[in-house]
Amino acid sequence: MTLKNLFSLKELEIHEIVRILDDAQAFRDGAAVPNFTGRIACNLFFEPSTRTQYSFQVAEERLGLRVVSFDPGLSSLTKNETFYDTVRTFDSFNPDLLVIRAHTRYYDELSGLVRTPIVSGGDGTGDHPTQSLLDLLTIRQEFGGFEGVRIAICGDIRHSRVAHTNYGVMQRMGMDVCVSGPEEYMEPGLRFMEFEKALRECDIIMLLRIQHERHGGHEGMTDEQYHERYGLTKERVERMKPGAIIMHPAPVNRGVEIAGDLVEHPRSRIFKQMENGVYVRMAAIRRSLEGELWH
Ligand code: CP
Image (tube, rainbow, N blue to C red; front, side, top):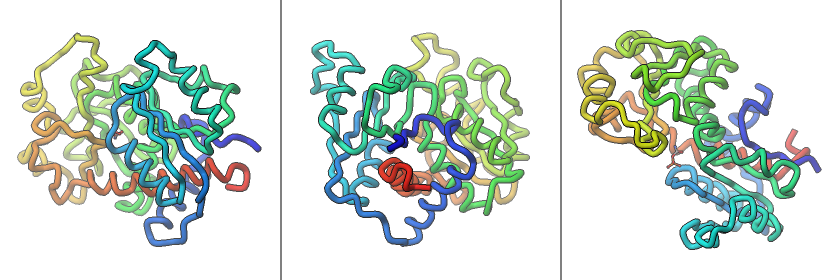
C-alpha cells in the first residue's frame, strides 16, 4: 500500500486539497465519520504546541483511534537519543499513524525508512500543512471560494512556516496573496504591500506572532514598537475594508501583533480557525489511514 504521508501541501494536487476540505466540511456539517476503532496514533511533538497537538488528539479520538502522546522532556531524548532513533522506536511499535512536529525539515532523513504514515504537525520554519488546510477551510466558508480573494499575511514572514505554506498554496488556489510587515522579517521574492494599504484593500488580514525563539538572540524592535507600527489596533480595524476579516494561526501575543480586545472582535475568525482545525485534521488522518482507498 502506498503510504499517505502529509509533509507539505506542495505534494498535493489541487483536487486532493479540495477533497480534504470537502471531507472536513462534511464532518463539520454532521456527516458520519469513519470508524478507526482499534487503530493507534502516536503524536510526537518535539516542539511546543497547544492547538495542533491537542486538536490532532481530539480529531483522532473522534475517529475512534487510541492516542499515545510523546513527552520529549520525559523521554530518552534527555539521554541524548536522536530524533531519528526516537521516531524509529515509535515506528517499531507498529502504530497506524505518526503525527510529528519538529524543529527542522525532519522528514528527508526519514524517507523510505519509516513504515507508518506520517502527518506533519509543522517543521521548523518550513511547512505547516494542516494549519494551511484549516485556514483554507475558514476562507472558503467566509468567501465561498478562493479566486481573487485578497489576503495580506502580516508579520514575521521569514520565520513562519504558516506564511511559507499559505503563500504557496493560496496562490495555487487562485487567491491574491501579499506579505506585509517590517522589512527585517520579509523574504525576497514575495509580493510586498505596505500595512496601511493592506488594511484598506485586502479581504483578509492574517496576523502572525513574532517568532522570538527563532531569532537567535538578534532582536529588532521591541514589542511596544512593533505594536505601534504594525499591531492591529482599534483605529486600524476601522480602516479595514468592509467585510474584511482578521485571521491568526495563534498563539496570539496580545498587545503586540493585535490589541487584546480585538482577538474576539466581530471581524476576527481566530477561534473559528481553531474549531476548523479538528475537522481538517480528521480529514487528513482519514486520507492517511485509508491509503489508496481514499481516492
Ligand atoms: N497554530 C499552531 O500551530 O499553534 P500551536 O503551536 O499551539 O500548535
